[in-house]
Length: 240
Image (cartoon, rainbow, N blue to C red):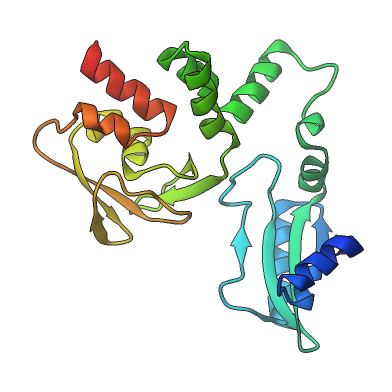
């Protein structure tokens, strides 16, 4: 089962985009809603068989889940000579996207379900940040980075996926991957090229942690770490 709808931008926003040089295809999109995740992929296959897909325009935010409220497939195809954006998602995911956190909250939630919702949304960031600093300004800066930055998906060479706040470095990735390994980090290999540990990572990067035979950790690493987990681990190793 699939329902098809058109998503049109408000007139003032459409006018602004045209003024900025956007094409007509950026002003509207086709939204397809299905009853299951597997049918999202089936619908995608049918769509790509019927219409020519545009290279580099496919985005999978179901298998690579960056947010609990933005799970969908997105592609762009040519229909009657025009580029058309298409998003495909389940009915439940559409409700999550439209209602946000209120889609998860019910009056009958148990304490355990509330904890699970909180952990899912915050990923224990608040507790980690609190353990680093009680200074309200430092707390705000770090919590803002953890919770409100756009997330990027970073892969290991084995294609295991890790989500990090945008702006995170290879050092942050190493501490998310393996804190013991991270302390011996000497370089990173990003998309097959050797890079320093303070290299800022981008969405879809493939990162390998290169280690030495001894611990390389030092106080300068605090200048390269941005996530609470990395900062906490470095502080504990240096000052405890």
